[in-house]
Image (cartoon, rainbow, N blue to C red; front, side):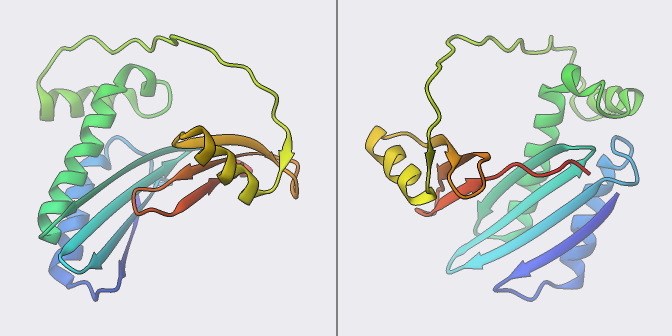
Length: 178
């Protein structure tokens, strides 16, 4: 697994980088060598946020944690990634090394929980009309939703706008799979 560590508004110490690599190394037996792990550390006032994104074969695993101490945030985000992997073990078996995944789950969680079934409780259908991003954000806010799907007037692609925790907005666009 290739690991890149980036600091935003902070110069990261070598001992933190080594700790992050050590903690991420426990996932190496689950993912291929071609998997990419990106660690982004952001410091703002008293908050230190660690965000980890692991990409492999079109699958994306992401977790984020904010704490007063950078190391505590790293511990929380590694734990959250582990929970995601354990929770979705049955569905991930086909995507990643199943034997390594089984061993990981047994080593770190020592549980035989049944995988959670995804139950689609409701299906909504609505026309997806072409609009600009700003119009989609306005529509989302008027509906008081956290996200809104629309057809981008400029690209013709289906996009999603969403409200971020920091008060800003995000835009999801399709990308060609590598």
